[in-house]
Image 1: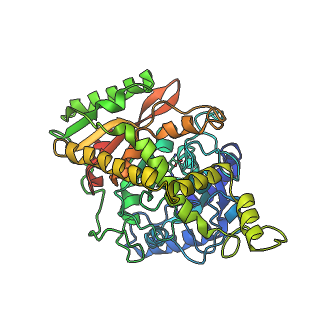
Image 2: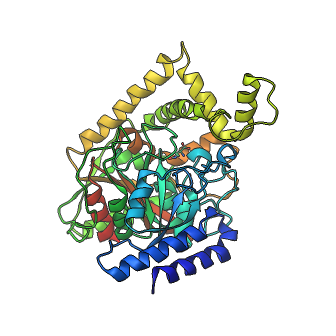
Image 3: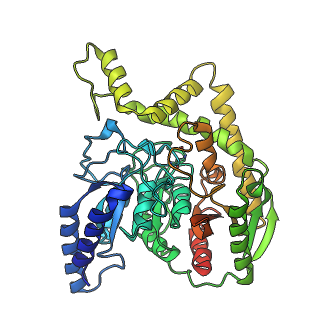
Length: 453
Ligand code: GLN
């Protein structure tokens, strides 16, 4: 079948089913059909890249030329970027077809997708449950077979946690692997974009197309282009898998633990060797993150002032009124909370007590990993402490919500690549197995994931 037929089919499925999931904010039918037509032409001409004609969707924090990019916020409800993010440009060059923009937590702040201005996303496994966040729309769209793959971003777990909760495969690359140019900044030293797909092979294809060295992003790594599918069929025999004791302690649902242990045994049967390790500063990760991420967010979000971008209040009486009301009306509760926390942590007199301390803790967390990777090739454990929770269950309790990312956040603080792959069900809800790799070692993580799957 042609890309046009596939695109029409999936647009039809979105039309028919997404009312129940709310995984899309915008559907770009016309643009998609034009891209599909061009892809079909390239396919007919021969020599088309492997992703040519494949329909995908982009998280609505990633700029798409001429297509609204809202960050799921009232603030950017009217924002139409005049350019594509580099990663979108790369995927367009690879011939992918964009079906639309996916729902998310507002400005990527959240773990349940309940903070979106456009309403929560529902987990396709059970629509009474959250799909995780903040990339819940991308994960739900892939899980509901509305798209074979989608882009997403991960600052503290936002690719891996929703992948875990929806039985999809999500990969956060090494910091700097994928350009952040055109990805609306949440916490710049932690943000990374990556794919959510149905399996490791599809994720490998998407990552191969997304990753590039980009002079427009000063933190982009200057690495040669990599084909992440090349090593998928390698044997995992002899690989050393580190199993950190801190990831199996208090707070972990016993049934989730048992699915993860079963997966590790499975990998042992394939010849991998399990090694007990310790990441002693794990408990510092959440407190450090919830100082550093809000601090960076408070700076990044200061550009939304009602003047240059986004929502502007009616009839401001003066400049101060314009700023205060535009921001008060445009940002939701969680975003305002983060801006307040971040501004406080950076303010004179508190900087050393909070921000500097958090940076010191970050270094200790990173050193744990550096030491562990002297002994092992990858690190594995659960992605989340438990399967998906019910809509509304944690939305009134920010601390409970923050604890969702207890196993994922350290990876971002260290800048390492991380992945979540499906590893079974608990009460019919998905469980994720997390793979953390050494710097630039995505190919090995994908290889292990592919062999396990
Ligand atoms: N849940 C975390 C937060 O709210 C992580 C979000 C993310 O990775 N974008 O900040």
